Length: 129
Image 1 (cartoon, helix red, strand yellow):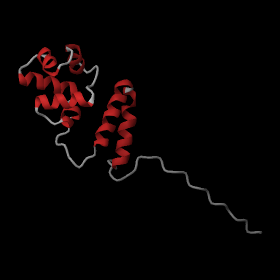
Image 2 (spheres, helix red, strand yellow):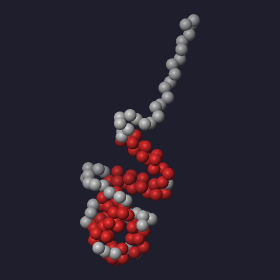
Image 3 (cartoon, one colour):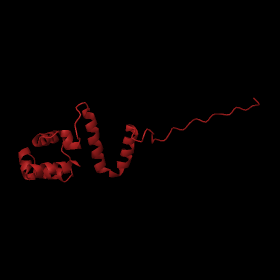
Image 4 (spheres, one colour):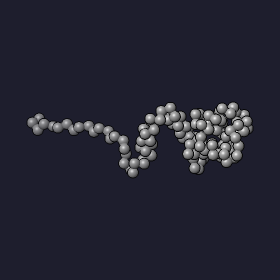
């Protein structure tokens, strides 16, 4: 489920309108509409306000993390946000990113899918020398 879908569900489950959410957060209704429609993502401080408002964890709201591991560094979430932002502009890169993740997480069943480095050819010695 995407961020906009999670936000829509939270709004629906709380039984409020986008207008009320905007008013409660002190944001323009157009900003809320932009988040709900997936045109933009809230900045970190706004995501934190949304999470607090709906009483959910910011990592779940933003990324759909089933359970936020406090040992996971925030840099991982920042990288995920950068990848998500990049894919919004360049969806054609999704396969490349997926392959990269498979390689670095070794999800290829223990076999690296990367191209092996070329081996240096052995030089033959002539018998006459």
